[in-house]
Image 1 (tube, one colour):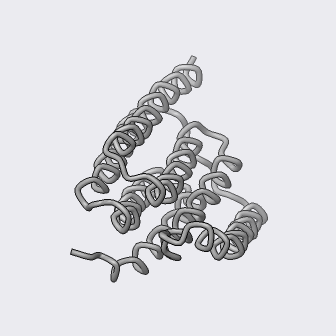
Image 2 (tube, one colour):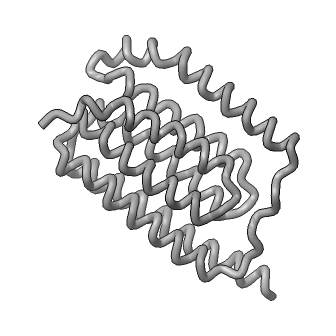
Length: 196
């Protein structure tokens, strides 16, 4: 069964969720956006891989989000402060620049990899760019982890076109879970240092 008709909605979810992860100050809403992002990533990967193999990304991503949610929920670190309008404008401008860079790179990537669809190129490159942007703007461990997982999701979309292997799918799932578990440890350490 082909899911190609879902490529445009999946791309829209990828773009909106990555912007929301960068811009939102609520950790719960950011985790919901990450969960929706993993659904869209799974759909974009399923154009290159069989759906059961692509579903590994969804399961691993939701497990990683669950681990981060549990750790953040029991953390006593203060919530992020409201951002000033100048910071919002700067983030918006940086996001527009990332999307302009992606728009200029997509034709080159699709020409170099003809088996890649335009939607996969847009989704993968957008997540890589927004993940790097989120990492650059992060001041707390939780936000850095979300940026890292977003970056890795974009890489997974791009890499799925090149390599279809059960071993690679398992390894990337292991990397997602490893990031979440090590991030959980780091958030616990951050909480202990903040209360000491």
